[in-house]
Amino acid sequence: QDVGQKPFSFTLGAGQTIRGWDEGILTMQVGEVAAFVMEPELAYGITGFPDWGIPPNATLRFDLELLKIS
Image 1 (cartoon, one colour):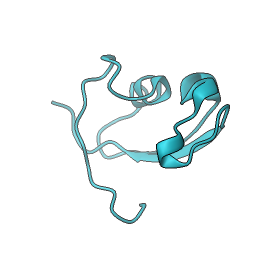
Image 2 (image 1 turned 60 degrees about the vertical axis):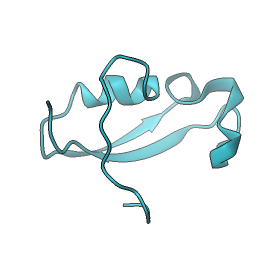
Image 3 (image 1 turned 180 degrees about the vertical axis):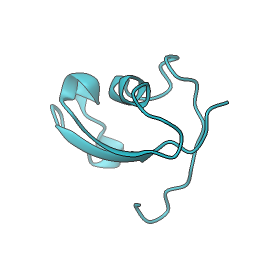
Image 4 (image 1 turned 90 degrees about the vertical axis):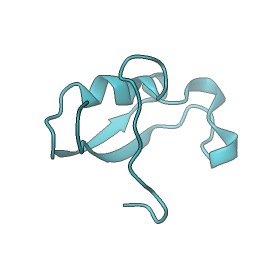
């Protein structure tokens, strides 16, 4: 877990996260931890996310834990 990272809620499929999270979380069960490697098309694309230091066309790895579904 990254320092400072806290659980957060979002509505799946509502565009509140990157597309890769929406698609990846659909494959998970509560309590599961999964590693996802996301090509730019499923992450921040050709623009990247400069405010977070993510360059254009970056392939990213995310380690996610699904805590609950509500």
